[in-house]
Length: 168
Picture 1 (spheres, rainbow, N blue to C red):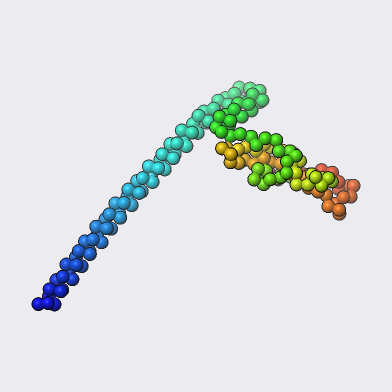
Picture 2 (tube, helix red, strand yellow):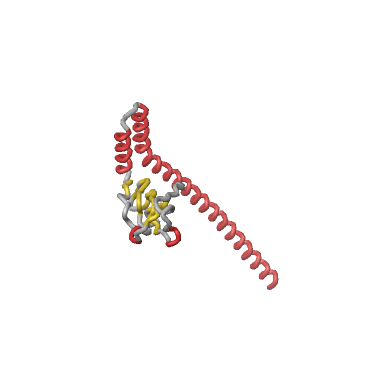
């Protein structure tokens, strides 16, 4: 009798474990469905928030395009665009000529050979301004950087300006 009782006990335990596993799998499936639904809702909320943020800017840009089509003076169009960027939190980096080249804020698109060691590695000219968005570089300033002439390149025919304009 003992063996049939132990077999019956094992059968009951096995059935209980099977039931537990089945309930846990169903629970995991239900939890995964909830996570998937919440992820979809979050993605939709992100899209709506981005649209809500971009809509006023896009409307303003459409108005600027209307002004361009109406042959408005370009200086006023530039001022309007700068105002739109400022309202969105985009600020210019400011003048960079004369500052040491910093790859965090500058993108070198050319070089200017210099004879003065003080000009080596210094921004010689700013070709396009850089912009910050909430303190983060939105676009680095495109600059030419001073590069000290080496002793072998100091021949009079090679002295002067040599710029490599390779914009990205």
